[in-house]
View 1 (tube, one colour):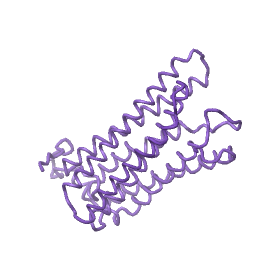
View 2 (cartoon, rainbow, N blue to C red):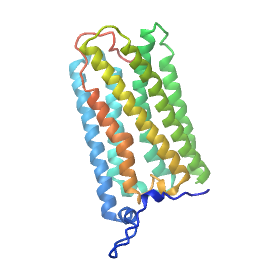
View 3 (cartoon, rainbow, N blue to C red):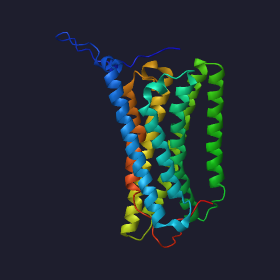
View 4 (cartoon, rainbow, N blue to C red):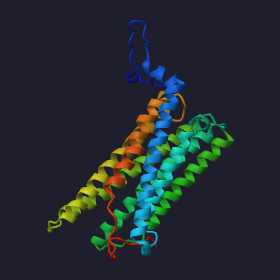
Length: 290
């Protein structure tokens, strides 16, 4: 397989005996590795804590509604970010596990859970859009669970094969699969987030609630579309270029940039945008998962 070096990441200083490659020096420094991965651990733990606090606030506000889409979304955010925090807290153990499939599993599984968490928003928006258009909604949840079930099944098959035979070809296909899944998520946000946004814009009634909802849908759509598109690009690049690999201990800077852009910042922004608590009165727009 041809490897194309990430030459744009390498800057030659060559002055006064300074190292010619600051990128490699940082990546190979144990202190930098620990500092960066513990920073990621703390950031994920903070986002996880925020999601848990918001979940508790919602439950105290409307305990009679059971498990709504909003509650499930915050619970899954708590789990995903909590798992990431633990993983980066024990980064030395995680990245050096054998066989090779174990670190891949521990790194990829939270990414799949992140996909399920945020495509839950796509499902919710799709239901609102279909209801507003008097279209059937009964198959939307079946479609959501079928897509997610199929993705997890394929990924488990990849992990099992890698456990039996550590094949570089299958590992390559696994990365391409994650890139495709991320692209599907980006398209989902563009499709239903965009549809709901333009539908709200056409509503004739001008009100603060309408403007807030328009801002909410537009902002979350843009954030999630961009983060999944970045994930798609970086994971696909890592499949062809070992210098862009994210599942190794000596690429801490790349891991910091990647996870900040595709998970931590998007999660923090979305949780902030969706911070409003549901009304105490029963609302047609706020319904439990059945």
